[in-house]
Image (cartoon, rainbow, N blue to C red):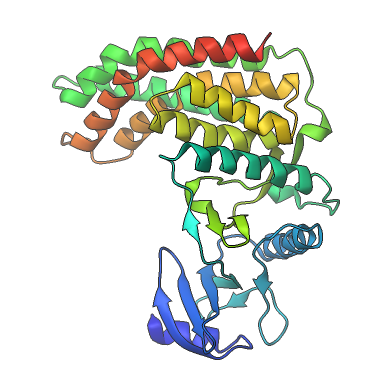
Length: 329
């Protein structure tokens, strides 16, 4: 692979003295110490071109952000002999957001809100393949709920059950009620979503994709950008942090406030956040992992995850009550 990588980098107008393998990427070192990132690109050529336009727009708008490096032929992507697509981008030195550090978390939230504010001015036509429908969340939750039913029916039909399967059945009704209540709320949202609530989203905003650099916080890794509700980015990050902090009410309210001070959250977005948090996504995730793995043997990792989910349920429930009250008053 290193030989192949060396062949690939020859397509770019730089002299690299070393190529190191990183987490899913190749770090290409130049003579003067500058670095570039080489990475596989799983999307289409049209998405890569849109990503390039968007990153240029963000830079022109005053944001410090990565940029795509063109090949010697002026192409955004490089196609390998096996038709694997690659792209090269600029590199930032910095540390990742520390999810144990409250100020890092709040800074990450403010950075996301600023990203959404700036992205809202992007006026290029986005390919339909990058756009999520207004009812995307509803369809996703319906699919997840059907899958929970499927897992329950599979386990109930078994004559002999392992620890995970027994515990899953014991907790199923509680979490299924939450799933159905969340779906009911999604079916009955009074307000229609407005266009201003939608735009280019990062698509995978987490602690690994925010670096603290000498130039300040920098968002990286935009390969999953899509056209969606801005609140989807915030909800994704918000849920991860809440799970890591045992659904700490104070931290959760501070995160919402930090985002709202940079980019105001409308009532529709607040209700969306409420519903997104109330859906038992973590319970579905562990059930989905179990069902798609080898079920002939007890997976201790799944059992541990299910136990952790249930151990946090009281704190999660109390948090959801406060969230619902705060976002709907």
